[in-house]
Length: 312
Image (cartoon, rainbow, N blue to C red):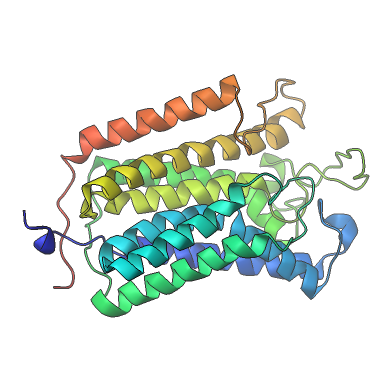
């Protein structure tokens, strides 16, 4: 097929993902601005400035990782050398969030280095808007088939498990909430060294929520991988999204396991932290899962429902 006539990757899923991450960024800003410092975790200030700083950290981790995937879609849509070069630069800026020390769980205050990833995210957002203005939403793939059902089922499980984190992000626990308060452990005291007021699910943002968001974004964006016209970019994006899905799921499960099972006393077995890549059996399993997801998706992808071009 002539590459010029091939379906373009649609932007509907990317726009939904941008909206989701934008909403969470606002929640983070408001919650960290209004709550007293004693109720927050690993930050050193409160008020609007501190809230904006914590939101900046969120724009880097995990938003920058999702922005890299969306940059691939925008670059394939725009295709001009200069714009592709801008997208590549933005991807490099986004990738700086993975540099050691840029984001640390033990210190979630904003640093000047966080601005690099934020700049990359801003460029990605701008290129998405440019692609939208030039070609509209583009290709749309009708919802249906077993793989969309599987995506929806997994997304529903993730959202249900993330209810305690969503409440914490809004600044409250589920204590006293009918049904949810008994189902989830949230407001019971679980102090740690340096955090005498810590509850089972501390108020504010959680890396389990980061994992949930990454997994949801990967599920949504995976619907348009087959519509990427560049073969190399299509393969790279598919592998990247598989890794993002495996990484997101691993961090969501690890945080949920710790807070809802270990802290409840159901088990003493802990899943090791998977936030930072390292040479470990857990990370080997994560990478193996990503490869399995990728090659399985490639094998079954040829049987997906064909996309429909929304805009000529």
